[in-house]
Every structure is written in structure tokens, then in C-alpha cells.
Picture 1 (cartoon, one colour):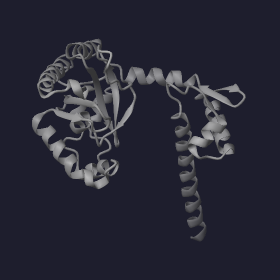
Picture 2 (picture 1 turned 90 degrees about the vertical axis):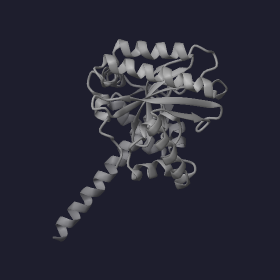
Picture 3 (picture 1 turned 90 degrees about the horizontal axis):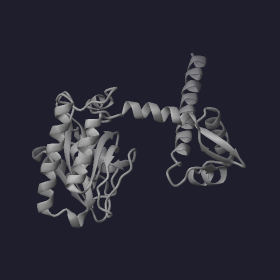
Picture 4 (picture 1 turned 120 degrees about the horizontal axis):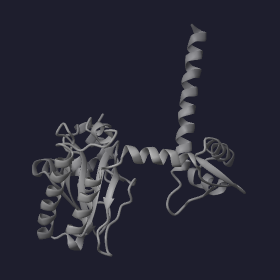
Length: 277
């Protein structure tokens, strides 16, 4: 019995160590962005807090997997394997041309940036965008992750989620649990109205309006929003934006037979309220 317990304990420790190594490797890949297209051992060690020997081992492992490409001199850039992953992701989340047309038409008519967000865990992820035509505009890059504790799109995405999940969202905010009451109230209003508004909740001077996009089962699986400088989001303009958003959402629903889908139903699966527990 003692031997069995020891074996079980060792296996559990090994699993934990493996998961930790995977998370560390993902943290390193997450350092890459539009501004930083290369990594080196010294900076990676400084930003992750990991010893240089550990960083070197992880960088070499990622290089062996093709996720990074060594240039020599301790420099690493994104590897060719990411091209295949990017292609697969693009095909999975590919929207029909009609969807893109509606999004572009909305951005041009409202003259503000149009975004589509989905919820994953305690984040909302931008999966589609049409930038507004004005030089002063609010632009979030496709793939960016934003917190759920702020923003019009977040309020839409949080309608009907359990209180236990809202508590996690509140704790994730700068105010902690003190934010729960205000969060519940704004979400309740969003559910009642069928739209939500936010002013400078995450970034100063930025406002947004959002409505739900429905799945084939009638549940909200994404949020369609317009965002821009708060100076252009007066009460009169917000009323116009709400109508424009609703019409665009109806058009999307019409050409998707009543529910938003993608080629591989990635969005349809999100209607199962992933991450609510």
C-alpha cells in the first residue's frame, strides 16, 4: 500500500510539473506581438522571471516543435509550424462573405469601428472587425483578449450567466468584489433592453454600444459592437447606433438561417456557456 501511494504521489507531481512547463512555454510565445517579432534569452528571462537555463531549454523545445525558429546568437522568431496553426484557426473561424459585408456596411454607416466578441473564460476575444472610416477611431486587433468586467460587449456576453461566474469576473476587476453589484445591475439592464452601453469603463475617452448575436438555439453566442471616442457617443447618436446594430444583427441572422455559425460550428459550440462554472 505504501508503494502504491508513493507511485500515485509521484505521478501527480509529474503531471503538475508537465502542466507548469506547458504554461511556461505558452507564456513565452505570448511575448510575441506586432511590435516584438523576435525573442532573446535575456529579455525573455527578465519578463517571465524564469532562470536563463530554463528559458533556453523552453526556447529550444519550442524550436524543435517548429513553433519558434532560431536565428543564431540567441535570437528566436515565430516558427513555420505557426503558419499551419494560423491557417487552421482561420478556416475554423472563417465567416461567410455576407457576414463581412454586413460588418463593413455597419462600420461605414455608423462611421465607427464594428467588432464581434465571444466569451472565453474571464476574457472576451475579438474575432472579427471592420474599422471605422474616421482618422480618430478605436481599434482592437482581431485576436485581442479583453477583460469581461468592463465594456458594452461584456455586458451582453454576461447576460444569464450564473452568479458564481459573475463573482469571478468581479474579483478579476480592479475593484474586486465591490464591483459585483454594479456589474449585476448593468447586466440586468442589458438583458432587459437587448443592448448595452459603456463609457470609459476600461479606457478613458472610449465608449461602446453592443447587441447580441444569436446562435441557432436562440442563445447569445457573440456580441456585435460599435466603439469610438466618447465625444461622438451622445445620447442621440447612441440611439441611432442601437438601431443600426439591431438591423445588422437581423441581417446576419437572416443569411445564417436564424443563427450565427461558422464552417466548423466553432461559434455554435460557444452557446454552451463555456467557462460559466
